Length: 254
Image (cartoon, rainbow, N blue to C red; front, side, top):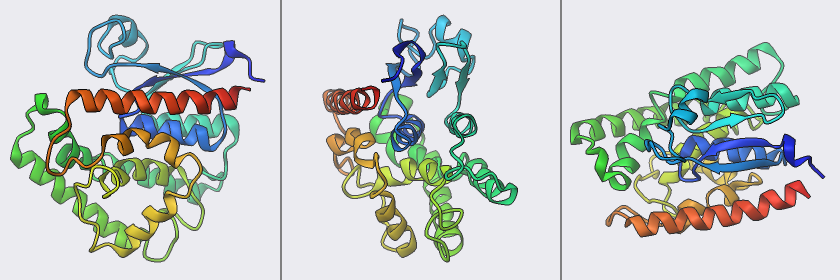
């Protein structure tokens, strides 16, 4: 049984793509953690702009992890996943071979201004009307994502099962939570028909343990391609996701 006082704290919300990447990695590795809800952009008690949160994470981003026994705090999903892999020796997903690890790092750096645009161009405009994202920005983000998918289709996934080779890596977790959310069974806001290698990879990733548990929020949210979800729908999706996560975490901690 895990010691409750030493269980890692993960701050964020299940609806966040980077948060889901960290959640998925930890569930895949059967590593217990405590989920602490943080409302992005809020200055409230549980908000990412609250002074107490900013004291630990000056950027005010999610996710963030905190180690209760050491007080160590770390933000940014990719940094968190690399840190956890280094700490726990998860060499299967973050190889010790310098060249193989460099390939994983390569994708993680590439992700930010390429694949991450999936949210800006296709999902955020329908979920966060308050952001008032200009149409020109949405169109540019969609074009950037399409270019990235072409690179995956004709490059990384043309001769490998996963993004950096035949072995699942941190790159795949990071990429899928962003790209996978666009699929028909989730938000249904992108047509993957022109990308058979990407579709094959998406199907393979759905078989990775923990996939369904961390994507409950999207399954509950459903198709947003025609009608934007109501705030009640979004809240309900998060509640369902947290219930599922609570069950999984109880199993890991026992």
